[in-house]
Structure formats: C-alpha cells, structure tokens
Length: 278
Image (cartoon, rainbow, N blue to C red; front, side, top):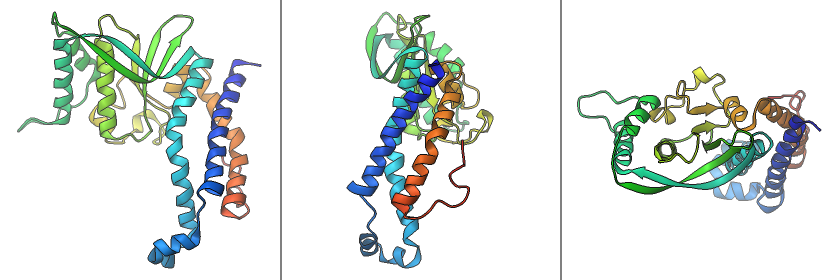
C-alpha cells in the first residue's frame, strides 16, 4: 500500500467516524420534530416549508463537530507525512521581558489606531524583526499551547500550527498571533517554525482571500507564516497530501449524500446531486 493510499484511508476513517456520529444524532438522539418546530416558531412554520428548517437543523449539528475534525485530520496528515503529530502540545521556553513588552506593543498598534493616524497594517517580517531586537536580562518562562504540533522525523524539525476555521474571527486570530510571536521569541527557540493555518480557502485562490477579521492581524495574501488550503496540507503532510485529502472526500461523499437524502430528508436524491465533487 502506498503512502498516499494509507493517508487517504486514515482521512476517510476520521470523516466516517464524524459523519456516523452526526447521522446518529439527527436520526436518533436529536431529530427534527416538525410539531415541536411549529409550536416554538408558528410564524416561521406558517411562512417557510418545514424542509428548510430541517436542513438548518442538520447543518448546525454538522458544522460544530467539524471544528475538532480539522485538527484530527491534521494529526493524520502529520503522522503519515512528517512522521509525528500531536494536538494541544504545551511548549515552554524563556522570553526576555523586553520582547514580551514589544509583542504587546505590536498587538496594541494593530488593534487600536492612534489619534489622527491611519490604522497600522500587519507586516509579519518587520514586526518580528522589531520584537527580536528587544534586549533584557530578565527571562520569563512562557508556555504556549499549540493547536497542532508536528515533527519531521527525518530532519528533526519542529513545527507549531494555529489551525482555525476558514473564516475565523478577530479575537481568535489575535490570540494565535500572540502565541506565534512568543514561540519565535523564545531563547532558545523550541520550534523551527510556527504558522497560522486555514484548512481550505472559501475564496479559491490565495490572492482572493478577503475575510476581513484575520486581515486585521495578518496580511493573509502575502505573510509567509500564513498557510491556506493546499499550502497547509502539503506543509504538514508532504507532497500529495492535499490530493489524498480531496480523493478521500470524493470517494465517501456519495455514500453520505444518499443517506442524508433518504434517511434524513425522506426523499430520493435529485438527478446529478450525488456526482458533484470537490
């Protein structure tokens, strides 16, 4: 069995486990009950077909667990690609006091524009250069909990990834940037590189990414520490990882689409709806 096939099988195992849990929830544990819906929202029920709200009921129970699944999939990719991956790794190191002060200064400038001045735009390279120039004899122990930690078992390089949903909010991104700046400021460094990563790009190409909230903290189109979609999967899993991910989803997608139509919506799939792929 090839490495790509092994990775594809592992990805499918994670997704199948999640989807089976979702189906159990919407069919058994927490089904859509139209009588209850009509009692709670009579106006909505009078104006909008039940099927619309039934779809929303499913969506809420599908989207929420996917947040954890992204991290599980990243660990699969790291284990099969780089060689080792772990969720929630605590990384501890010393950061001198002036660097810590400069980190807060940089974050404050990005968050609050000074009177009469234009808001500062994010610029990772210059921000990090300024922070690393900070000197102090006072070293302070700092612990950062990385969303996803990975090691290349051949080169022995260590990586930390802040893995967020494709449309993250501003507060999440600020926290991630602070964590990454602290990792790069540790003496000695505990990881070789740290990245802000999104599992896919809802805008298609990197240059088209235009969600405004993370753009307050990173230049989402040019910062090298930002990885979006295939850039992230290839970094953590090696060449071919994104292709394996897409193939894995496309192979099992039709099975679950048919189940959702028949078992949940109570209808036959419309013509052409099952064949659609990523």
